[in-house]
Length: 238
Ligand code: APR
Image 1 (spheres, helix red, strand yellow):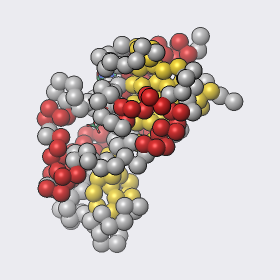
Image 2 (tube, helix red, strand yellow):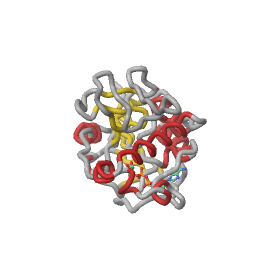
Image 3 (cartoon, helix red, strand yellow):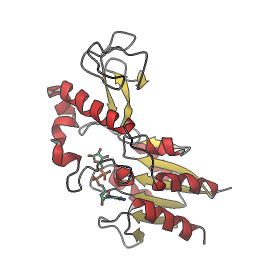
């Protein structure tokens, strides 16, 4: 019976793959007004802008952004542990690296869902969707329709919306023997609160080159994700 290792990752784990983080200098929120492109009011006000923002991010993801050694290191740890990944990231780099269990807290960039039936979720590129003015298969617009003739929206949790996967994520952390927090500024709740669900006796590690303040019982590895995960594997295999 392998011990349970749970990961809680943020934008920092994808930084070395070429994805921008949100709050580092020059990050996404320096370049886009977050409440315009990632909030429920922003979507109500200007849905076309939000379709464009996420369509651009999708095209970037497929234009040469690949999993890095940190994502692959977490797959390597599946030899030693029953690994569960919880991620705030909307990219699919954990999946593409080969992680077996990935739970997205803030949604998934490569998916859209019906505005009428939220349970109807479509993986892009999708032959089920029609976008009359599309320039490429990853673009969605206000004119995109699903097979039922309904409009779609990015399958993303906007600021102001509920985080339906938080409860299952908290249950995973409660069952963890080892919790590894990687590449997150720990400023956005409820995700940032996951660390508090670690039970007594759970070993907690935090890998981040510019770590946020954390309780003294957290083992901080103040390194970038690729080297930090390599060092973590060495430590866990001792
Ligand atoms: N390796 C590891 N961590 C890194 C690296 C790297 N190479 N480069 C930067 N970081 C760290 C930064 O030090 C910072 O702590 O990644 C973190 C990025 O923080 P944010 O940009 O705030 O990203 P994140 O914490 O994931 O944001 C949480 O905010 O806008 C919302 O929904 C969005 O999921 C996102 C949430």
